[in-house]
Figure: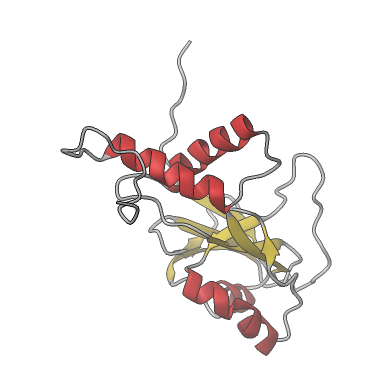
Length: 195
């Protein structure tokens, strides 16, 4: 038996409201360029809108002109999608509360997640959206996931409850030692001021 090895998220498709509400939210609030549209090939009553979330992948929305915005929370039962997290740069994240407030969008405020910060709010159809910003940049050639894997190992070895900035900093140091060569034989921490 062999795996079907995934390499990335290809796209995520959500059920949206009408066409203009969907464009106004995904492009007008979240800044995702509207890049493609065609009929929903499985339902002739719907359109299929494609948005670029910033990494070249796609968020697609099924729209129907009979659906109207309804901010009531959508189900988060087992088997349902709980929320969609979108990555923001630190600069954009620091503006998120103000920009959501400008539109009168109710939100959670900034939530400390240890390794990232988050803000939660609902789209026009009650679907939960998370704006997330990492508190670290991985070394060149290393992914955020690899840093989190190493930080998790350090956290569990130390018996700590959740990943904190110290685990991230130590993980980045460990990964740098493993992925970057040096002429030095001893790469341990030194104090050049104590001589």
